[in-house]
Amino acid sequence: MARPTFSQKVKYEKELKRDLAAEVVATPGGEKIFSCLQCGTCGSACPVSVYMDYTPRRLIGMVREGFKDEVITSFAIWLCASCYECTVRCPAGIRVTEVMYALKRIAIREGIYPRHFPVPVLAKEFIEMLKGTGRNNEFWLVLRVLLKTAPMKLLTSWPLGLRLWRRGRMCLTASRIPKAANADLLRILDSIESQGAGERHTAAPGSSPLARDEQPACGPPAKAA
Amino acid sequence: MAYTYFPGCCMHGFARHCQDSLYAVFNALGLELRELKDWNCCGATTYIAVDEYQAFALGARNLAMAEKLGLDLVAPCTACFMILKKTKDYLARYGDLREKIDTALATVGLRYEGKVEILHPLEIILRDVGVKGLKAKVKRPLRGWNVAPYYGCLIARPYALSEGFSLEAFDEFVPALGANLIDFELKARCCGGSLTGTVEEVGHRLVYILLHQAKLAKAHALVTVCPLCQLNLEAHQGKIKRQYGDDVTIPIPYFTQLIGMALGLSEKALGLEKLLVPLDWDVGEKVFAAREPAAA
Image (tube, rainbow over all chains, first blue to last red; front, side, top):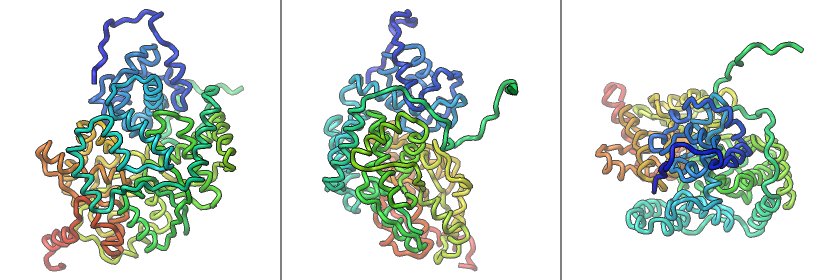
């Protein structure tokens, strides 16, 4: 995949695309990107940051400053495997994984990704299949993604498929939900679509605790009223 | 106790053996599973990369249907488990998201109130049966076995486990089965998820790190609690061996398969023959005999 290159190190105000940060802030979990300390905890916790062109810390910095093109064309957003290490460790409470999802969404919506790159193709095929049968079948999903991204890979990946099939772990007929239930599911998804993007989220105080230690309050004690 | 069972797509597909063993073990422990009728895919971590609201609607439909049944919901796939927990959390915290989802669910006559509890089978076994209870039911202790438990990401991240549970607490089920617990340092490190299929050079490296570490720790089996980790860790061992020149062959049983073995259930009921890397029942006995010849 072609790596983005900076043609200039500095951007002038009018070249910045500030709407990117607004969209990320409107994502549940992305509200706090302006509290980012740029400490780099996310990148050091991330198991795949060593393969990224920009670390998560840098991506958040670039999102805030409006470096949209660099962010959206980066390889890093497609590498995130949703392990949530960054999210539970971020001292500023930024749900970095949700920020990554938001960036993937923007890239997919705007059609900015290499044509045969499997991650966005997988996402699209996954959804198409889900809408068709209500569930996913790995055999057809993998087959469709491979055909669209790297048909030659079928030559090297069929032995695994065969081994799974021989053990009764590869189902050629998809597990599907009844027609009526599938129609219900589609009605729900359509209803969401027709309601539009709507207003930005407002978060109420957390209900399910994140897997992390409580952090002590910092700063001077609050004055009694 | 009876539970509503949310299999998720994998349990109906490549993880049939995990499902076989889950039913067998729950049955042996006197726990009942009732599959949620007409469940749909939870959207995994994939749907949200295209549309976040629809992704939450997928989880909400399942939760609303489960709520009607009034039982706790069991999700043995940790991705489904996390997604359903996340849906519950976000619907409780984001008012406008909740409004949208409620409107959408109402079009098909469903209503979600936020009452249903989502649990992983490991939590249920340790909560309802307990470590002592499990130990009492062991018929064929896995003596001599070095077992490294591997939990992966999503069972404990981003959401904390139910109260009183931590990964350290989970580790106790291994000695209860009579096996030696290997304190596996990478127990919560990522296996790469779908990267093993999409960006192989990265995905395989992540799997290799885990397998290599398990071998270094002299584990005879690396036991998982997630069907996707299970597939990832066992399916690419051959390729990894060729690529890194390191023999990382190690069986990767799902945790209910291991529990079932100790409970004395049959190999077929536990789907052991469906593992890609076969599990040799005699491994532990040989080690045990070498260590304590008199007792053996």
